[in-house]
Amino acid sequence: MTSLTPTDVNAAATALPSADHVVAHTLLNCLLREVSGPEHQTAVDRGHLLLRLPRRGVLLSVALRRTSLIGAHRFTGPVTEQNGAAWTEVDWRTLAEYVHAELSLRTGVDNDEFLAQIASSHQAVSAALAGRPAPAEGTAAAKDWLDTYVASEQSLVFGHRFHPTPKARTGNPADWQAYAPETGATFPLLLLAVREHLIAEEAAAPDATDPLDALRADVPEGYRLLPAHPWQYELLRDHPALQEALDRDDIRILGTSELPFAATASVRTLYADDAFLKFSLNVRITNCLRKNSSYELTGAVALTRLLEPVLDDLATRFPGSAVLREPAYRSLAIPGPDGGADIPLLEGFGVIVREGLSRRLLPGTTPLLAGAVADEYPASEAHISRLLAGKDARTALEWWAAYLNLLLPPVLAAYFDHGMVLEPHLQNVLICVDGDGMPAQVLFRDLEGTKLVPEQHADTLAALPPEVAGPMTYDAQRGWDRVVYCLLVNHVSELLAALADLHPETETELWAQVRRTLQRHADRHGCPPRLAALLAGVPLPAKANLLTRWERKADREAGYVRLPSPLAESVLSATPWNA
Image 1: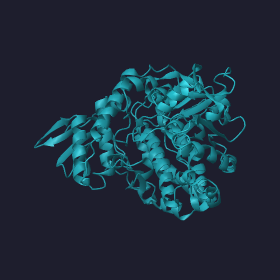
Image 2: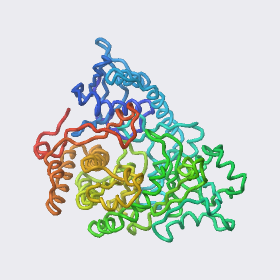
Image 3: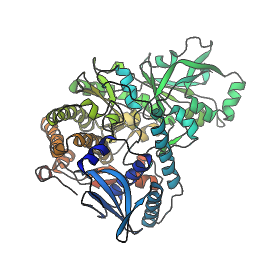
Image 4: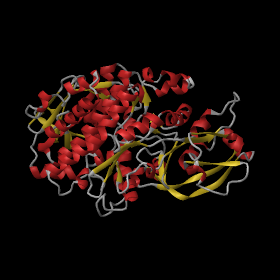
């Protein structure tokens, strides 16, 4: 093994890796966190991570740019395996086969989808690297805020670095590239006119459906406007009940919207004209089929109604934060064989209206997708390295303290004071920065991931249909694991890592600031046992994406592995961990 020079390390930190390397590094991240790490089959030696697959009998190595207190190390270059006294390069396909073999031997079951999904993810990363738009000149805070915001949503070329197939998508690549955020996709919506009695709709306020109705004024009398994602329409166009409705003139195709919509990071949520529209897509992305289930359509509006006083309280107490509501949905209600609405069409054409940014955004700020700010590589002007370009370590620490004060308190208060489980992972949070690139506000989004702790909402949940209330809840412990994972492991530790890439000597102090912010909240608002344990340094829950994918479980059923916490005072006062 060879050692990296400082020049090599600096270049690796700023250059985008190849698809081959990023897929291999992502698989190593998953193995380190979920398999080899917990089984004590890893070590750091002379600037390299050594990782053993004990059942397959393979010893792997990869060069390190930087080690991490939470074990989320930065890799660079190819992965190699030991062959006698020599080390030979392992390509991503071979590594995927090694992972497949190790998990088969470990679990005693096979997964015949796994290798194809990794190949799909590699194909998507390759296409994104080849087709990504050229970056515009200027800093994120200086350019038009809307263009900057959309660019941040469309900059996640590599996706989740602790998911084995972060860019896997079913379907023809030629189809999804036209609608992929990574390629800068913008496109008009397909507009359908549907007879009024065949419309399913709920709204939390009289004007909640205005973003839908505004798409076209000249809708025929007796019809309502229903926008459709053009990709989803192509996937559903041969459904017999849809074809019969078109033949009966119950549905008319009006053409396309004048306004193009931009694909955001979730692929199926589109943005234009100060509104988000969350469509269904009968496409499997990473782990799940991305459709709005019937209970999710109703649940979004129900949560918007039910949580209004809670969200108002949080906004009053923590004025630097806000949650984007989802006040309406609309879909098709064509009768099915049982006389009720045809479920594949109801869910397939369901569109959820989410508030636009202007309803909650502080004046003079620029919203940026947190995942783009925290990306391992500077793939957009939203990246933390661009926000802090030319700034010293002291300024980076000031930025971090300001951000934590905006992010942590409302999430903790939502859980402990209101029994509400927010899901503040990197794709669900917008960081709003001022003209100097400093954090001024955080916006939380996507009520699909927001859950209620049933012990604190028994009466509310009892008033809802069971099929809606059930998926809307987590028990208190599962809810807490979800909060800690999304907030600290997925979000805080990844953004902290991006800051530590800029100033490696600050990592321990960055974690110390996390602890101080948590302690300050505990001192002001009470320190319940779960928060006390967190401050004491109990292990942190990390979602087991690799094992969940291998076991073909839904995300809601995902298990957790436990990571050593860097929050204990004894850890933060000790010499930084280098293993």
